Amino acid sequence: MRLAAMNIVAISLSSVRPGVAFASRNARFGARSPTTSRGARFSSRSSSKWLSSSSRPALLATLPTRPASSSSSLGASLRDLLEQSSDPPSPAAVAAPLAAQIPAEDVSTTASDVEEDVAEEEPKGGMMKGPPGATSSTSTSTPTSTSTQADPTPTKSYTEPMISISDAYDSGNGEFVSLRFADGEDDYCDVHVHVKIKPDPFTQLENKQHFQYFSFRSTLNPDSPAMRGLFHGKKSIKVKYVLDNAGYASYAAAFQGYSTFFTTRATPFDPDSWRRKDDTSVVGKSLTWTHTHEVDGDASAYFAYFPPYSQDRHLDLISKCAMAEGATVKSLGPTIEGREIDYVTVGNGPNNCWIIHRQHPGESMAEFYAEGLLTRLLGLDDKWDKVAERARELYTFRIVPNINPDGSCNGYLRTNADGQNLNREWCPSPAPLAEGSEDDAEPETYEAPTMERSPEVYHLLRRMDETGCDAFLDIHGDEALPFNF
Image (cartoon, rainbow, N blue to C red; front, top):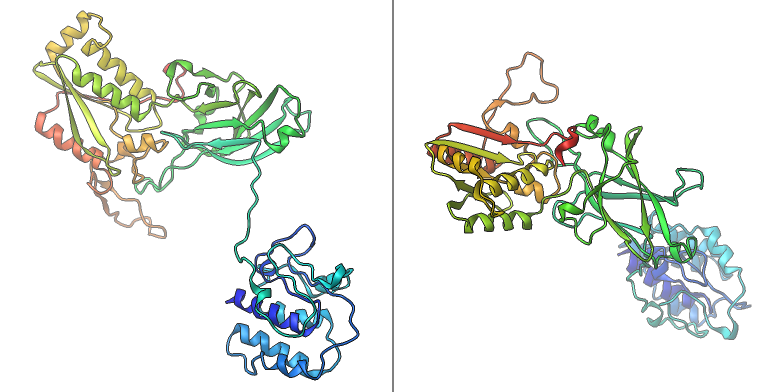
């Protein structure tokens, strides 16, 4: 509706005064053209005439007498302006009814801005000058619709960033915050890049959002304006990475003495390529480290809390187990997002042993452990192992390499896709008191597990009831233990 009102004004003003036109698109979207300095612009040329007696009735006939809508209200205001005097109105007077129709957040141009623009030098040759898309016309007092045929779609410019941050891959987690150029005395770096960890979905039982795991890719763009200008000719760029919210993580103490993992391989899923950043440090509530990007070499690097274990690698492990002698592969059931919860049965002993991994998906080292365990029990590396043979005689192992594949793929620390901490979903427990409840109020029961919130644990317990369980191992990875990798 506001755009329609602008178009009416464009017709009216071009008729009111030869050489005066309103750029409706720019006023609506606040755009600027190379020849204008403000969102709305009037161009004029000197004229000793106002409206002839023949043109005034024709113009007044186009304007409504009653404000039936925002556009007609604007037209009625202009009608009043024209009827009051035979002298030409000032630009401020013309702008007043116009400004009343447009919210302040849409247009920053004021009446004084318009007045200044009208006072600028007229275009030569009697042609009106306006932004791209506005139609020019010669001097005429006859209203036409051609001056309104501007494309209402605003154009957006794109500038290639110097550093781009991406977590759009399996288990990625990291969001770009800001970039600033170093002052030359700060850690001898060229650029500071600030990133934050994205939180897990809200956890109902614990009444919080967990976060700590991060994994993101950082890419230097040699063709960016900064690299072509400010850093032109440099062979490498030293970047200081700042993880802004590390100090507010679920287990922030683990960052003390911690070293960030990195790899410059084209994929983050080569576990042997990961190395540590020895200059990792905690500064206030932030975690920082530096990395030197080669302009003509390794322009990209991956950084992670711990090296990720991908879903593709998981499926490859399951495939190897399915083809191994003495093993069977089945699914406990689907997750919330539809991924199968695979488990491998190994051995034929009288004792039933269940081993699960990655209830907390951010502890990726747990699935590397599962891979090593299955490799040894099944001889996937073609090595004969007397201990593994004896274990298969004593136990029937049912091994779940990843009980939380949804959380793993989404880059979460502790929860599944619904935000539930599976390690707290094994039985009913007192529900957290609602905000404002009395301290002595009787808590309600938090039912768990359920198919809606925690199907992973629900499927597992159902299967364990069927097979029995003589031994149970729940494999986690403690972030504070330096020998996890």
